[in-house]
Length: 134
Length: 114
Image (cartoon, rainbow over all chains, first blue to last red; front, side, top):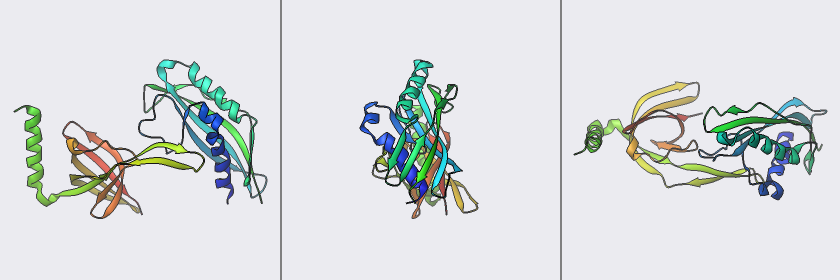
């Protein structure tokens, strides 16, 4: 298995956990968001943009766009970002194919969503390093 | 007869008079309702194909990507999803943007790559 699929498996395993599902936050990878995703959901994009320490490694940034009802105000997206922090910040995910180490997170300012004016969109991002098994 | 019914009737007449200029196409409705992060597979719901008449208004090709602009009767159309496909003359096209939609007619772009 290549490093990119290994990285994807590591990150997807976070959202496959029962603890995450218990949060009941609709979660979709980018390009897989349904036509009617509802009033609150997150969109996950993995950007493995930099070389790692060896040929089996890669680093980059996990970008999670948080969509929430505009009427819920600026607090709700940040609550969702805090929930993401619990699962991601400083966490190390180790599967048989490799290990992903997350660093600290940040969020962008909340904007009105361009496609659906009833929603706000806040971009949560967290850098990672993936160390593949040779 | 109401104006709505009258326009619908005239639109049906117009399509009849187009004869073979109107092509039979099949909409295959596919909607992603969720995503399984364990298997990295989307949950896809499909509906049986719906056959409608379409007029190809414009055909273009850029590199290996062919594009058609279809004129369709809005009342005949299923709800169009971004994941739908359209079968046209034995080829399966991906649904592109809806460039115009009113009560009676819809202009839909479909795309075939490779």
